[in-house]
Image 1 (cartoon, rainbow, N blue to C red):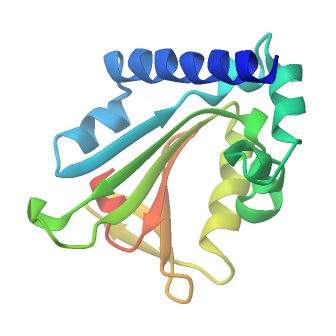
Image 2 (tube, helix red, strand yellow; image 1 turned 45 degrees about the horizontal axis):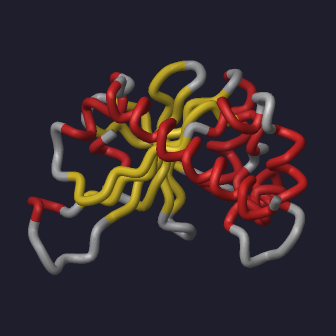
Length: 168
């Protein structure tokens, strides 16, 4: 039974990733014109608020070896719950597209509502942030954490390490 549920979950995730790749958001399309090395899209909303919600929550609470086990900690760690995320796109960007250079990581979070994005940016960047204008965008930064974020639209934010978010 558990194997069947995990197989369905994996297949659903693959189908969601194919759908997301076929229909990129404007934010994702702008990143794809840069130098991404890895692009991973997770369609949270379809699963965490869909008909399989109960099953996913049961599976996710079984053991810490499951990646979804730690989703319960998201509100404390980054200020947003898994069921408040519609789509998460993780991007590894290498400056100049050079091979062998450690990539910078950025993420684009599409949330259910603007309030969720406010909490995410505040918690992710950390206390005492500064605001800078980067490529015409207002970017919230924190030198102590090395993190930055900016709002793409009311329900979408780009987050990442210094320098990576400017590409989003």
